[in-house]
Length: 514
Image 1 (cartoon, rainbow, N blue to C red):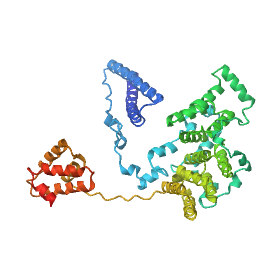
Image 2 (image 1 turned 135 degrees about the horizontal axis):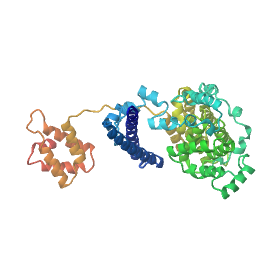
Image 3 (image 1 turned 30 degrees about the vertical axis):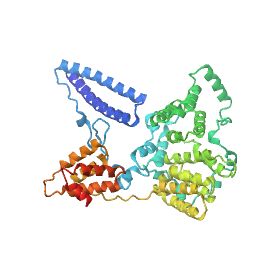
Image 4 (image 1 turned 180 degrees about the horizontal axis):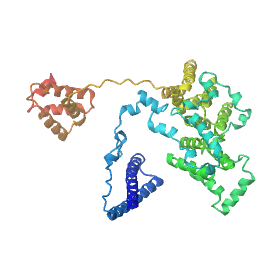
């Protein structure tokens, strides 16, 4: 009997824990339904499995409690299972408080870091750590290297605001010592001045010669080969991944199934580099994919190739592909916010555009500021240097005779990075009676018989007999205000209303005429 009682207690604890987790999962699914319109297949399957597990546990607990003649554990209600401030009513509605997302609040600023809201911070900072959820052998990493990678990730990605991402070489850029691109970028970038981001990969990467051709032949014969699955993931599934959950799932699947192969990783980096043409919406998700992989493998060449392409395209004065340059700049900005690309890459590119501040260089500089300027401006280590570059850009705007389009672009980028402070206008407190009169005469009133009759009856129901409330004066005040500040048709409606009130309340038209 003691063994049965011990099993019953263990089963009861599991029963209560499963019920609590099921309530949390249902709340989360309801919120996702309200925000996104539908649930992902994985989330629906997880919810269905959780409900079936809860049903089986309920049957087991009922049978065991009946056999032992014990009471069934009482399940906590939805309100009791909530945890105070974070609990909702189960309908996806939460109370928004200004201090939670106010960028001027010190606590909110410390929590959000260089981002403006919690959703943006979560997208760029809450990246899955595959080293903690998968065995090293599956990822193709030696067990002794895992701790080193975790320490590296802690240094590079540890802080919310990304301040730890600035290394010794980059902190020099934050202090004003911007390294010239000739010291970092090789000279063969002249060959990369074309539209490399929209090229379909005809030349290959040098590591997929005979092996790649053999893999393609085998893939045609057998669709279960790793090469065929890799091609499906890179060429079909990755360009269609426009959701956060989908890109995380693809990144984990790649690391588990193909990450241990160096040639597969090279092919992936090439695919990430060759973003589909005119698909700027994929850049944040491709950058998130690169950020997930960068925490596991440190052999990515994506940032180096993009930087080489950006400087290589800047060397050509004629036959420039503007869309390719803007796409490269935006891509680097997204990688900077994920802390994959060091901030000095964007700062160096911005400085290069300011050296020849004309033509397409103005568009590229504004694109860099719009993509990651706000992030760099609110990061402590890069705030000073970016402020200097922005001051230089504004002085160049005043000194040069630029056209209206470029002036508007520069002003827009500047205020997007450093928007003017909004002063809260004092709100005038009014009594409920005044607020109701304002609603009736400025919003509800229309120049038709039904509306005038309704408003007239409501005005007659006011406390006219109360000597402390001067209803006639208040009604005339808001009637005149509706004529001055209201809609154009309000003048006719007020005149018809005054004529309607002439018999019952002659005070109103007399005051109005006076």
